[in-house]
Length: 176
Image 1 (cartoon, rainbow, N blue to C red):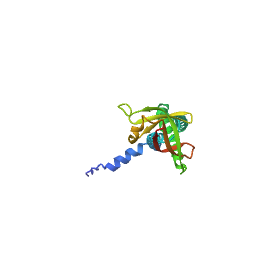
Image 2 (image 1 turned 180 degrees about the vertical axis):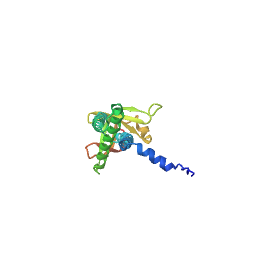
Image 3 (image 1 turned 90 degrees about the vertical axis):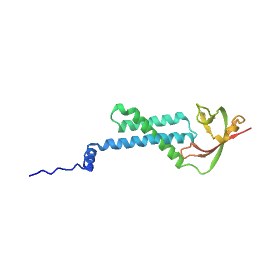
Image 4 (image 1 turned 135 degrees about the vertical axis):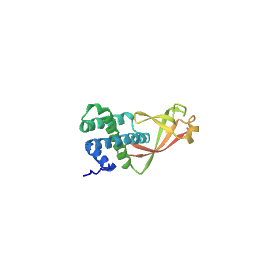
């Protein structure tokens, strides 16, 4: 009696390999992927929100350490998990602040402390302002760069977010 030769099916091999992967690992990889995306989302939202860098770092570290202690069991992955889960916390903070924002816009006039024109080292022209006790750099659009030398103030059109931090919708240099 002749034995039949089984054809190797690609679907069978893939299913066999997938059965060996623990579901907890898949869940962690999904969370880490979301954390990396949240890092870039938080970076974009930080540029549009009047909040100190120190407050965001403290929030991110606190959330990251707490979630890492709960979810991650191996110490060698703590640094990456703190970063990923901290980004998840800051992205959630920015999302709630933006979702619950007031529809009424306000004008905030801030004194310019320093100016930096676009160069090989600086990607965008920016001005430094002090608002509510912290210093902040605001990017200036290319259209308004000609006003930088003559301006002493910047007029920020902003909406108050749900958590109390202003979301910048428009920036204009003011000559006085």
